[in-house]
Length: 219
View 1 (cartoon, rainbow, N blue to C red):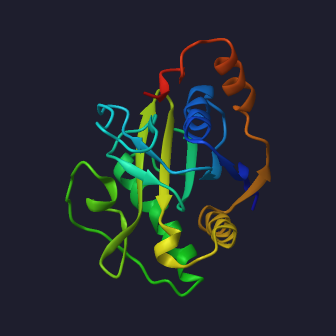
View 2 (view 1 turned 120 degrees about the horizontal axis):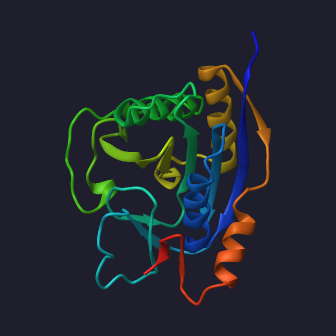
């Protein structure tokens, strides 16, 4: 059986503007294949949902995501994004995609003997990790993995955060485990690539006095 080819952007470290702008650019590029990207943060910051107002009196820089959802504080967490076209093997339904992707993360965590459960309740609020919703991953009763999504045209962007500090797992080992679980679950292979939006971010940043990229960025 032929294995579908996905693109993988290995783990990167960037500031809040770079990290979220690259995800936004990937959504805009409308690539014909799924692309999975992992990244961490150079310094503490906040991200907040695209349709929300920026948080008031934030003590660290605040950046707007291309996706919805509440406020997330980023520091030692592992963040990933998955952008894919509507005709891929992944679900087009936002709820189904949310749960399926988290089940892949759940299986990856099990390789480290970390037993999480899927949340089945809704507790929506301003702060994402204080407000677990259906499909989030809970560990010892606390939310440790959540995500936000946005469909735009023929593509869906899923942005997820895993609190690896609470789980005590090495970030690069977890990246490898997640990649392996995606391969097994969807019978696919990954091709490593450079982030296709690097040049786009640099171009937009250098050609504008604004701190926004395609409407996303620091506010």
